[in-house]
Length: 331
Image 1 (cartoon, rainbow, N blue to C red):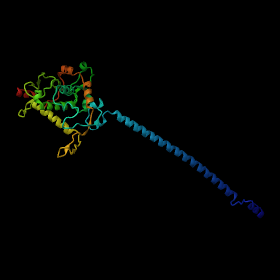
Image 2 (cartoon, one colour):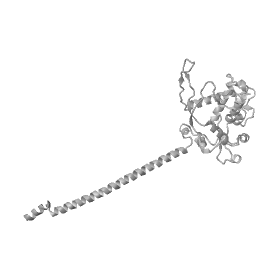
Image 3 (cartoon, one colour):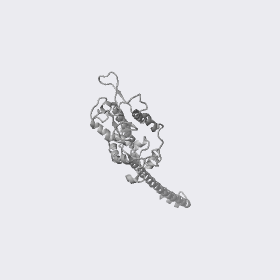
Image 4 (cartoon, rainbow, N blue to C red):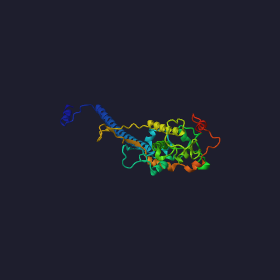
C-alpha cells in the first residue's frame, strides 16, 4: 500500500480528498457553472430589455414632442390669444404677429402713412374706404356668448335675406371703430380744411346710424355746424361724440399691454437728452387684416338698405339718457 502510494506520488498524482468529497466538489462546480450561466443569460436579457425600453421611451418622447409642436403650429395667433380676450377673428385669419419698428420720428421722413400726411384727397379716400367703412361681419350665437354678449339682442342676419343659414348675427371689428375715432380727432384738428361738422363722414355715418336720414345724425343737421368743437355746448351731440372718441382712445391705449421703454439719447444740436420714439413693437399684419376685412364682410350697401328692426324682437335697454327728451332740447 505504501509502495502504491509512493508510485502514485512519483507519477504526480496525489488524491488529497476522498472520492465522495470529490463528487461533491464536482457537483458544486457544476451548480456554480449553471448558476453563472443562468446569471449571464439573465444579465443579457436585462440589458436587452433596458435598451429596448430606453429606445421605446425616446421614440415616444420624440413623437409627443413632434405632435406638441404640430399642435402649436395648428393654433392660429397663439401669441395674441395668450394676452387678449376672446375674439372669433383669431380663428378666421392668420394675423402674422411680429416685431416691427415704429416710425417715431418727429419730422416726416420716407413714405408717410395716411395718419402722418397733411389732408389731401388721396389720403382721405383711403381713410374712408379702409377705415371709416366699418363693415358688418357675420358671427355665430356661440361666438357671441363667448364674447360675453347676449345673442338674443344682437341683430340677426336672416337666412332668407342673406343665405348664411340660421346662425348668423351682426358684428364689427372694434379696431376700426378706434381708428374712426382717431380720424374724428384728425379732422377736428384740420377743421378749416374739411369745413365739416363733427361726425359728418358720409357712408360711415349711414352704416353706424342706418335708420336715420342721410344728412342728420341723432337729430342734428350735420350741415349747420362747423367741425370745431364748442366747450360751452356740453349737451350737444357733436361734442358728445368727440368726447366719446377721446375717451374710447384713452381707455384702449391705457388698457393695452404696451410697456415698451423710450430711450433718451444725446443728440446733435440739443443740450438735453432727446427721446427716440421709434420703438420695437409687437404688431399684427394690419394691411392683411384690412384686405380680409373687405373680403369677409357682407354687402354693405345691401346691409344699409335692408337692416331695419323687425317688430317683436328682444331689445337691449337704452343708455341712461333718453333720446326723445334730448331731441326736444336740441330742437
